[in-house]
Length: 77
Image (cartoon, rainbow, N blue to C red; front, side):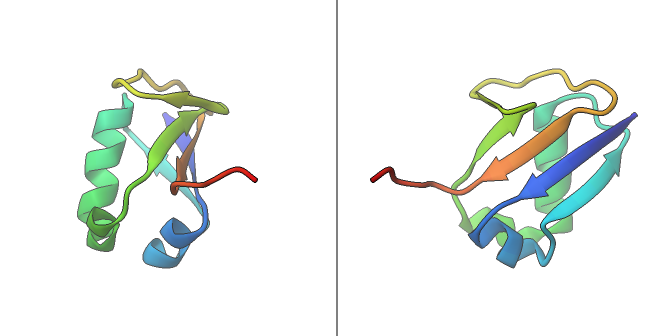
């Protein structure tokens, strides 16, 4: 199962990537754990996770082709 992962702002700087394709993750918590292992600098940052353009607060099941975005805090204006 392929998942598309996007990083924005400071998170892209921390990972050195703006986009990844990840295989064999079934939910957002598994993905988060894998990315924190692969990119330890992410531990220092706060972020929210969005699955297919919807911010999720709880562990969410992922499906083939989903796009998961890691978003740093932002403010409106």
